[in-house]
Structure formats: structure tokens, C-alpha cells
Image: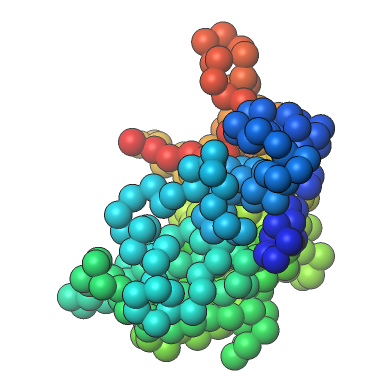
Length: 307
């Protein structure tokens, strides 16, 4: 995708948002830009990308768009380059947190930098850079346009899984030593039986059939991919399910042992529930669509959480 310099739009905007609203004028009306074809053109492009893709600082600060970080911790991450010697962290898309002894760490996905930063946030007001993982360097081959991060223990060792929207895959990283992360493997669309990783957007981990599996949404491919990561150095794609417009997802375990993935289908204004108890046969079991019954505010869902 694009996004730096001239205020270009990322792939998600090109495929869905701009097509959905047809013109920058309609996008501008939605977000309050007064002159989208003139003085506000670059701001409008950036604002649409910022609103729909979560980019916090793609090209300036549009006067009518609120792209400020949503909480105090993210505010510190957002200003790392100004206060603590961090490289520019442009297009922050996702954060993940973990502990190591008495220390607290954050992983910061920088979409426009094709990089993920490891920050010591034990003192939240003074984060320090511990490591940089950049696409194409030091063995990292699947960090182009990172969009989502999850951390999980596999056989007692902490690993990070990071989706690559532009690279069409997932990078697996050993985080047993936070200041020295190590790439161990990656899964890529069209390689080794992985058929649904184009535009990899979000990732979550679930224990299925006694093994850890990554569940990945593929926005461009239009579906979800289930990957056996019990051997993190050799991930194995075991199944996929078509779901047009799949973006965010969360995993829910039922008391009886059933496992479900809740998936937001942005293009279809829909929330889909998938039974993933058998990782070899994911099955759609229910859906909720914008405008149906009492669901009046489900247009273009992009995020999910459980409480």
C-alpha cells in the first residue's frame, strides 16, 4: 500500500472505503472536510486513511479530523521519536503488551515504516527503545505493512505473531529475550498450502485439538486462515474459510470446550460467528448484519472486543 509522502491511500481504503463512498467528496462530507478537491485534498486522503485504517500520523494533522491517540500510553508511544530517541514511528497500527520479570514491554507496529518496535514501558511516561524489527533486515521477511500483533507462549517460550497486510502473511518471532527478538518463521499466501493470507489483517491464537493455532483474517483474500503453530519454526496452514471483507476478530471459548471466532466483515456490514473447534473444518454458525432486527449501528465494522 501507499500512505507516506503525498498522502496516498492504503490498500484497505482503495478497495473498500473509497469504493464504498465513491468520491473524496462523500468521504469529506462524512468527516467534515470543507474543500476536499482543493486545499483539503491531502488532509482528506490522510483523514480517510486515518479513520478507516487506524493510521495515527500519515501526512500531517487534518484540521477537521481527530487522529489523536486514544489513551495516555499510546500518546507516549506516539511521541517516542520526539522524547526518547525513537525512529519515526509512522502509521502506528497496533500495540501488544507483555511482561518479562518485573519489566513491562510494548510491541508497536508501524505500518508506514514496515517495522515493529520493542519498547520498555515499565515507566509509561518514559518508554525506552529496546529493539527494532524491520522488514528486509536481520531475517525479517514478513513485516511489510504490519497491521496486528498478538503474543502467546508456545512450549513455554513467548512468541509474537504479526500480520503483514502488504506482504500477505504472518511473521513469527521468538521473544524469549525482549531486547533480542529473533525471527523464526513466516507463513505467506500461496506458499506451502496457505491459500487465504492475501491482505493479512488481524491475528489471534486459540488452542484447538490440543495445539496452538493462529487464526488470521485476510481482508484482500476475503476469508480466514487457520495455521498450526505448535512448531513455530514450521507453521502449517490447515484450513481456510471464505469470508468477504474479514478484518478484526476475537476468539471466544465456551464452557463445553467449543471455540468460536467472531469476525467483523467490513464490506458486508456484518459480524460473523465461526465454529473453529475442529481446526480442519471451520464452520459459519451465525451472522448479525447491519439493519437486521435491532442492529442499526453495524455499518462497516472494523474492531471487536469481549467483556
